[in-house]
Length: 134
Image (cartoon, rainbow, N blue to C red; front, top):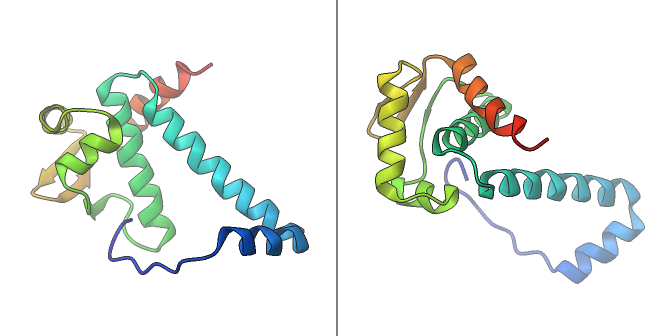
């Protein structure tokens, strides 16, 4: 979640029944689920911490951009420990990786405010991760 979230609980059996009656809905649900499973699998794979962090930050950037917000300046809604859990890192590692990216001029971090200074370099790091999947 990028910000405050409101949830609506939906019965899976009812949603499944509705999806079988509406092929377009079923296809869209499968597409969304497949994309999320792919992201989680990629982040869970054994890649360097910088690669996982780069992929994570780019994913956040893309999500904010889709919502009409800045793709290069945004707030991290997750605490360092939550990011660490999500990326399978120790919280200290998250801090070290963010510091390294900051020292390299790729990002700037102030508390939870994130500024992507060099999105192309961040993308190169994430591509290095994706190249290992082939």
